[in-house]
Length: 317
Image (tube, rainbow, N blue to C red; front, side):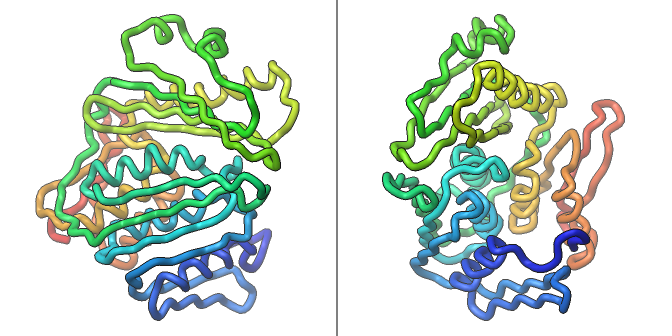
């Protein structure tokens, strides 16, 4: 529901266009003033698909929706999507590739693959992504209830310019103990060879001893950013990331809903659970909708000692 802006936005219509391509008997019902949508996806098609986005949202906007579908896919599917690589309003393509897909593989979806191709001459259709998934049998139990300790911290800096991110750039922001510790701490610089676009994306990814993956990212699309503005940009994203580490959460906010969807599709009778510091608004809405449609599938309890929330799928489902 939207009180300020009624009707569907162009990029939402574009997403429904993609949905219509990959589903049989897809049903979308919109009320007269365009504030409520009832969507029934139907059954997934088997085969190869192509979608050319309108270029007002980043590719991760479309890929996130497809990630929601992957747990329920019991068919081979190969989707090629063309569009915009990065926008501040969406998670980075790096976060989707190194966090969302990695988590899917960790919980039994090992055949999910993604290939990224850069278009060198377009400013709005500058990237092609091919997402492949084979036929799956979802029967691998998983748990994310212990954060463990950080094994590796990776920083991925992707830009269309010649600038690079160095350890010296971070020395004024990060504590010396982190810069000099034995942690697997690496910086990866990637350049996108397209002179028609201007962006810088920084993605932080941490993997723990228990298999948890925490991340945060941000994108700048401004030109001629001053050095002091860069420092503020770095500080903001590292502060957000450190808050996650301090909280002891096992899953970051971006991946909560995809993980809960995997809960629903997991076929094992063993107990599966995840522990988080706080539920995002998207997660709360998802849990409410699931309860409304399927009944009390999830058990949720608050641990007073650690001030964390444990979500457990009930084995009766």
